[in-house]
Image (cartoon, rainbow, N blue to C red):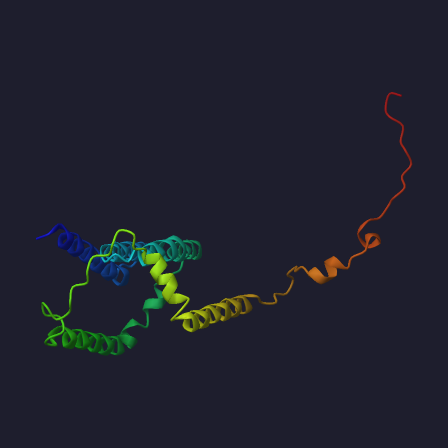
Length: 204
């Protein structure tokens, strides 16, 4: 077996094991760390497929930013997961139905003839040394998929504004700054000159 296939199967098994641990471990911190392991394994598989841009983005964005944020939130909030598990039995039938549907779809895809057999798809030629995956992705984003890219940016901007609006609440007794009033302030409103009589120094 070539080393390429060995590395692919190793990272695939690690990714599957990490994904299973995400939904089976009881500690949310361990679940987040398992998800980090899953992302690392998926990034390694993308590197094998010569998709370097997506592999690096997965590490930088999801592992370096999103998952670290999740870990900080989980550790700071100290969430009690016991009340969250009380309604598990109530939603168990719906979960079993969804799992069976997904398993059926996977079996249909795997048993479909002519789709995954050897020779069904032509093997792509190896990329030349000067080929840049990042450049190819950038050209596609800003030419053929420019409209979809801009729409995705607008959706993310709206999501950020909505998140800020939902968390920015008026709380009684809180102190908030008003930049417009701070800009229009006058010197007499902030500074007061007080005349005091000089006091003699001790020993003089």
